[in-house]
Length: 348
Image (cartoon, rainbow, N blue to C red):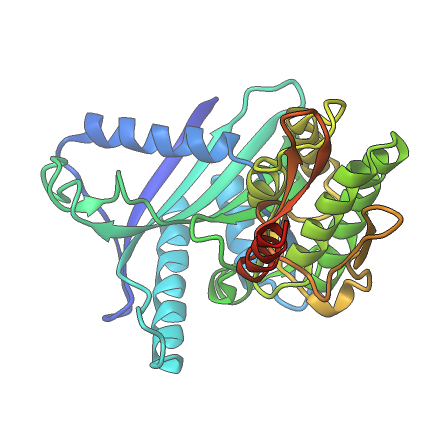
């Protein structure tokens, strides 16, 4: 890829000022910026957006940057707008533990050097901290290198004969939280998929593409535990993160049956990201998940396990067990159950 231009702007949301950051060690800064752009260009998309059709100011400015028109003036306007939005957000939310800190806004236009004339305009916000000196470019104070807190927006476009074909607008946030001041107020974007739609679609895709095939292949015990763990995750409050689901709900699971491959299941999860049918990170709406855990498991003709409610991390509570003579069974991690079984053993 080829960087057409980049601009670094210090955002002072206390004084509501935006000024171009100047560095003496330009080679050092160029390498730093290139590393950020490489990372953002290859990063996984978290949320997709579209322009809010009722607002035009930011879209007009983004268009000018993509067409390389009045770049310095437009960059300054965007910087001042962000400073004002952050100041308003801090003022309106005094109860928050940490205010939005002073930061650096990086604007860059990148030619991806493809036959379809694919370009990326990257809008990246980083905290201003103790790593690169503003005046010297040395590792003192300024742009974050180690503890980067990035909010990004990437505009993917094709440019042909001075016209723009908008391909995709995507955002990501290193904190995995959706900041409305960034996407909605500053960038004037609205979600392509709402949290409600994301919740329903993500669960439906996981159920049909990941879980149902396990059951259909005859691995009912594995299906039951993974299905219950998935429902427990989807019906809990908080953020849905596809990477977390892959690495923790699926990745930490210990299958009962050799025919169930955790690595293949993780690959299936990754393919769900590629479909683009739901965002990889969003706020869950638990009320939209109507399925409940399968609360009855037949252990034998005489025994049945009844589960009263969803169990987060159920794979760490119900464990497979094999006796020395080869008999298979189940271990339930329970202090009360242990005392009961211990009492039975004492009566032998």
